[in-house]
Image (cartoon, rainbow over all chains, first blue to last red; front, side, top):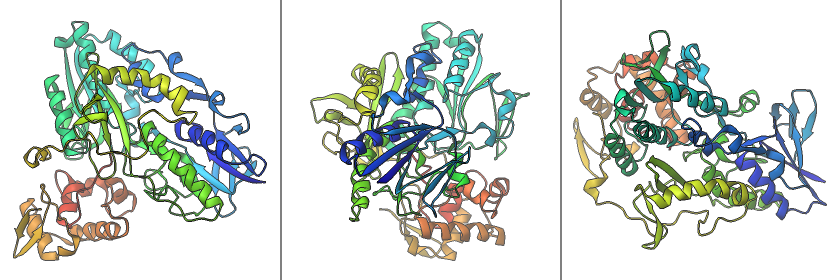
Length: 421
Length: 105
């Protein structure tokens, strides 16, 4: 009997457990999935909690509910991976050997990476990337009398790179609805030179920030936070004062990766961008946020990777060459407030472009433009996530590889990246 | 792709002035771009950073992150800001003839 071990029962790990179980004969292949707890959060839902649209209970279900019966689920803390002996070593000392390992350990916020950030933690400094942080922030926003809300991205890469922009759009919308917008200034602080990494989307999203009177501070790298003085201090000497700091702290991979000596400087696993095999070990693969790949850290990416990764794990198990099938495809709904959302669809080579999705002309979803149908798409996605995506069922009309059909490249003149200098 | 004259050499650059062909880079090109970026002299400390970044770039096809520079012990982030004021990761990549750091998506 051979064994595949999947570390992490989040989006990527759960899809892989389902897809592999369907393809591999249970008589010859055991599949074991490991996580430290049995709570699966629908992470796109975190954004909605601070504004009272969802509560924590609305977006959590047991991980075990989404795993096939014939997949063994172990709830235990992992100490490390030992690639030399093909073993997982648990905190309690027990061991689990594998023939193939799939690393799906995700990414998490690490506020302790920025000096001073924890001094004001959940007092005047909040995150919305954890259920606890998003819930605490909901209470804070509800009672905030006025002042200056600074929305801050500490360092890239981060999970769901559009989430802080969505937060800014939602903030503007909710404050307007409650007639408090005039009492509050919104500021968006980013280490990037614009709203987004890619020029066309950066321009479109930057214009939207401007329209919603959100002031942008770009190329800002925080050296430390003076929580008592309520300001962020940059390496270049600039200071950004705040009354409420909503930060996306540095995102890093699992400590398991670091303890195993397998990670890069962010504890992400160096991974082949097209085959999804680890660059260091022949029998280790990776999916989702745990990789070091230059694509979004987002559930849609894990979903697009999963089919290709399944194929490659099976090929590796049969001693066949791997397929370089993954193109970096990412697809995200960006909530823009007032019941509308923007849809972006892109890959390693093609930046987010305007157009229609999934069908040219017919759409029905416009790309890179706020629309109601995109907002409904985002809300429907919670159902799709639990019922289609996690079980590894195809999502209608959305293939794993990105398609150019329906996308339009703006004329060369309009393609200028926004540059501060 | 625009051509640009830096010092005495013509190099291919993108819209933001990053070299698109690393093989066109020379130390003279670096000195000329550094001047445009407001760095009058490239000191041994600058060269140490540039050489480390280029080694990484040759191996990975990507300029390293500020975090990696800091962690590798080559230069602290504070020193990096002193050497390449403003946006050091981008500025150093430009001077070193590397493409713009992606900062990921």
